[in-house]
Image (cartoon, rainbow, N blue to C red):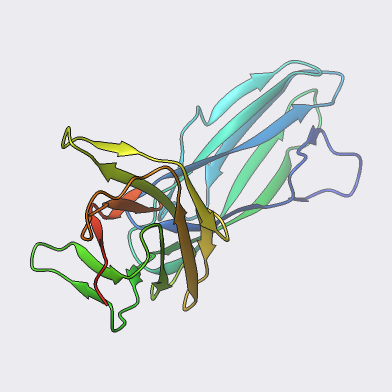
Length: 230
């Protein structure tokens, strides 16, 4: 945070800049900028964004702070395209008979999309209904590779479900390595290995759907492992 004057600042603003990082296109992130009046008199402050673009100032832009009083300005970032967005929060403080004091805080954010897919291989194929078919000779162990071809990091979480006699999918205990939730950098791939516990396979062919979510959205709803097929 830069100030137009070199003397002791009227306002104390802990943050020097606001960086949102990558936010998915269509999503919204909100961050706070705290402002404290450390003068011995009340000050009137005005705030605005230099270039709103994908940023929005959500709170009142004009207010009065008593000595020692603090407030927060909420900044919303909603990217609409794969791009880098830059603006600045400008704050003007006046009061106590002194000159106006101006402050400026840089604000940055990037809009992007994570595109996570399952890497194809000989025993893994995509069915007509959009589900993945994984052929495995093991009853409780299977692995696959997730690839992020988007331009931002992705968060992937795996949930394993088993459909029993009730025909109702139920979550089952599973050991997922390296972890059930992983970060996949853009252009990177991660191998996931699932060791399912507590499922009794009654036949040589058994289907166990499991779901993978990426940034909160379902990547695919059903992933069938067909056991006993070489």
